[in-house]
Length: 127
Image 1 (cartoon, rainbow, N blue to C red):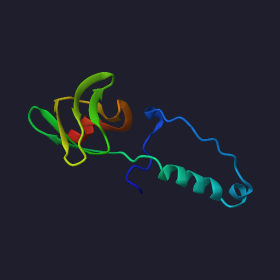
Image 2: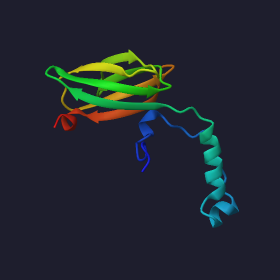
Image 3: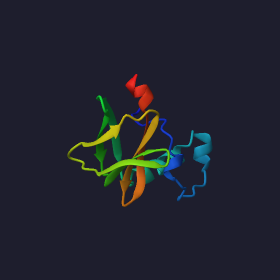
């Protein structure tokens, strides 16, 4: 299983920008032309990365975020902003969180657009 396989993309605002008409080869040979076209299109797109590790202490937790090609990070509980910081590919970014039960969302941004997201259940992480 790949590292990000199965992650939900809908909330990142993915909209189709390529229309594809299936070929005879797609129908008879398990989408061969479709897969080739999709791979070519995806290979030209930018790649982003966001990994988050949680370390607990007496006051709350520290999020250690390792990023790839992101400008900044934001942390939310629902619609409430908790923290933010600039992101750097060459060094992890640490964000201190108060003792916050429940789920948080760490968002990775490029030019103020969300391009990566991780949802972390702090209740489960603490257990």
